Image (cartoon, rainbow, N blue to C red; front, side, top):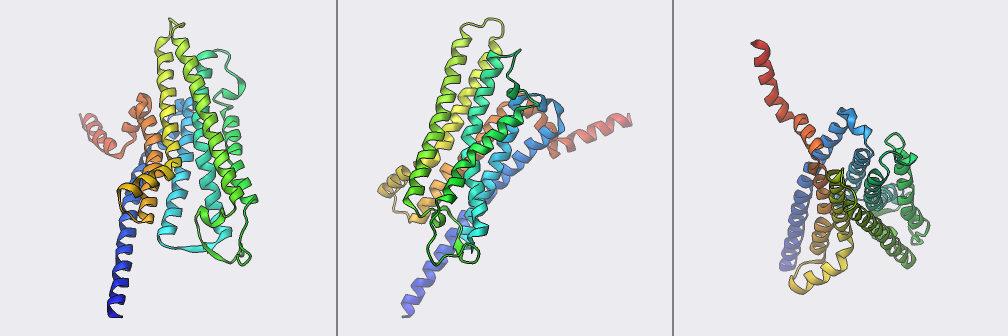
Length: 316
């Protein structure tokens, strides 16, 4: 019995160490991401010229959406790591927001690609809804579409007879609420449809803009830049689609590495859910020269360097 007790204690200790390591990996990445996103949003809010462009407004909307998605995802991750159980009535809103923002990401990429298409082909007679002062209509439509999946998902939800929505504590994760095979089939079909439509939209805009580069002589620079932007949106879509590679990566890891199932799930979660979300807005934001220049000026360290110089000038 003492040996069995010692073995159980070692297992518990090893599990606690594993949880601490996982949390210590996720939290710093999230803090760095949050700092960069807040810096970008502060830059947007501080310079009026960004609000005169539909492209920048959609990008700011993407930043807000990805921040909400990562915030809910990390919260759910911490709850699972800490084995925190609470009633479904409190768990459901987190899962709803996490799913809706996840669905919203590819839709935003499609909207940004279409915005580049409209800017190239209709520079003087831009459609009403794509103007900077009316782009909120597109954003509202994207939100409504992205809420379809979680809404239907909760309608199809089938809880066990002994589970009470208001009082029964559960571990807050999708598997706790998605017990019906119909739910799983619906989610797979909807996710496939969402990403397929977005891929077609990005491919269509890329081909149309590519063909336009051979026709236009006077403004090739802007057309070429739009083409690179659409390619970047396609890359962002591939990063988002990596979340659906879980079954493949789990099979490959099991074949080559003798990891526990919980460690494999964490590896997939970090590499194919969190990491693409970290990289996607940063790649796009830091690529834009205008935004990058204003971000450098907005950093506290830069302000600290500039202030003494200004002070010395005033003293002279």
